[in-house]
Structure formats: C-alpha cells, structure tokens
Length: 157
Ligand SMILES: CC(C)(COP(=O)(O)OP(=O)(O)OC[C@H]1O[C@@H](n2cnc3c(N)ncnc32)[C@H](O)[C@@H]1OP(=O)(O)O)[C@@H](O)C(=O)NCCC(=O)NCCS
Image (cartoon, rainbow, N blue to C red; front, side):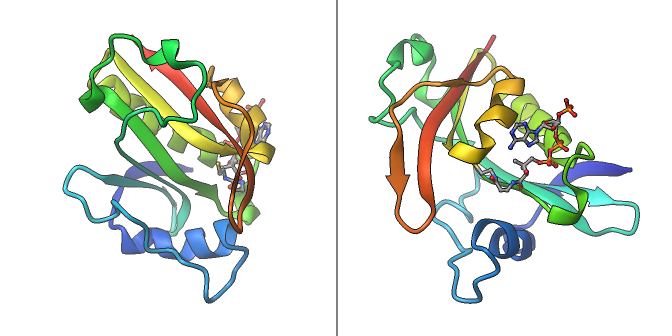
C-alpha cells in the first residue's frame, strides 16, 4: 500500500524525468513555480519509502485558452488551482497510486472551497481525469516537445 504526503520539489525530479520527459537526461524537470512558498508537491510513497506517483499544485487562474470560462464564474483567483507534473511509475500503473494522488490534489483545492481545479491534460490522460469528473474546457493545443493537450477543469463546491 502507499500513502500520499508532501514532498520536496527535488523529490519530483526522478519521476518527472522518467515518465514525463521519457527518461531524457536533458529533459527539464525544474519548472517555474516549483519553489514558490504557495506551491505544494505531493508524492505517493510505497511500503519501502519509494515515491511511486507525483503531482504539484499551486494557485493559478484558468488560462486564456480555456474557452468554457463559465466554469470559473465567481471563484476568486486565489481559489483557482493548477496542478501539473502528474505521473505514476510505470511499474505501478493501474494499482491506484495515480488516483490516490489525484484525490489528494482535489482535497488540497477543497480546503479553499468553492474552488476551481484545472490542468493541461495530455490527450492520453483525458479518460483518467474524466473519471474524477474533470471536463474538457478548451480546444486542443500543443505543448512544444510534449504533444497535444486540452485544458481540463472541475469546480469544487
Ligand atoms: C495518468 C496516470 C498518472 C494514471 O496513474 P495510475 O497510477 O495508472 O492510475 P490508477 O491506477 O490510480 O488508475 C485509476 C483509474 O483510472 C484509470 N486510468 C488510469 N489511467 C487512465 C488513462 N490514461 N485513461 C483512462 N483511464 C485511466 C484506471 O484504469 C483506473 O480505473 P479503475 O478504478 O476503474 O480501475 C499514469 O498513467 C501516468 O503517469 N501516465 C503517464 C504520464 C501522464 O500522462 N501524466 C498525465 C499528464 S497530464
């Protein structure tokens, strides 16, 4: 089993590189906002203390390219949260680590309810976020070097 706890920014680097940058040793894994005081990095930790899933969250307003802006209606900027860097170790996929991590990110936003939670979702991960009741709120767009994405969001009341 595993538990989800806050971790340091640097503790995300291994999984960011392996999962989100395809193991590229040159892949950039230090990201803007990582060291902001308001940023929280979470990790799912297994029984032997290894980090098997990660995600990072901070306040950030819904981006301009979100075409369904009504989802953010009447939610203060300080209660709009972006999460990013969501990844689970390939060896544990399908065992609930990603889901438990995502529930922790939702709970983080829930502490400020009413809140908005959003992310730039890779096309391959859309089904995962839809399971958590997030919805697509933008047209498809490309993130250079990573691929096609949609903005996905959910209101938390
Ligand atoms: C997306 C990701 C984080 C999911 O993590 P995971 O540990 O495999 O997820 P879980 O095992 O907790 O899965 C929870 C549920 O979501 C489903 N699910 C997982 N990934 C899914 C996907 N990509 N599409 C649709 N459903 C998915 C699982 O089947 C499971 O469903 P169930 O409860 O009915 O069995 C993981 O696949 C990953 O790291 N992918 C590569 C990186 C990536 O795309 N990150 C997202 C960037 S936006």
